[in-house]
Image 1 (cartoon, rainbow, N blue to C red):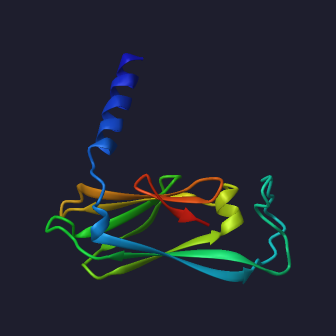
Image 2 (cartoon, one colour; image 1 turned 180 degrees about the vertical axis):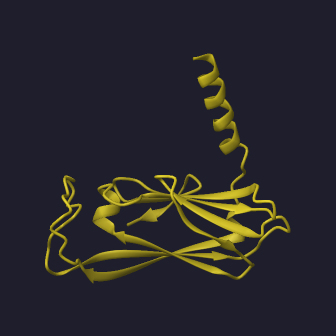
Image 3 (cartoon, rainbow, N blue to C red; image 1 turned 90 degrees about the horizontal axis):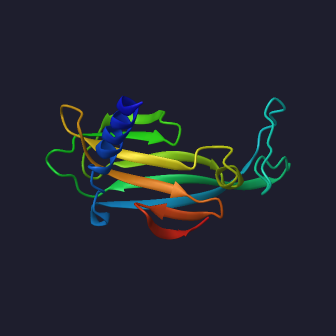
Length: 153
């Protein structure tokens, strides 16, 4: 049991030691559109706030654009993971790149039907984490970047 807590502590330090990327070095733009939800009768939605709304009309849909303004010499790759620790994007990056994330329907993000948190890691040549950006949507729609409130969806 002591080994388990030691490993848990080491894992938490590894994440905490990675500094946030300074806000001057990136921009995040939210792009709202309206899309008609395709019928998927195999998926069951149980959210109280309308997640999985079966409306036949267009629903608000969110794309996120991450514009990389500046990179340090150590930052050569980017890896984006969602709140399920699945790697969404992993590739080389240069200053000026725009990375597009298809977030999904806003009701699904708020209702936790789809992913609501993404961590963008900037990696060195040997794939060590140099800096990070944490993008988080609260259940009320508040949008946070590195813990700083940026608005509401």
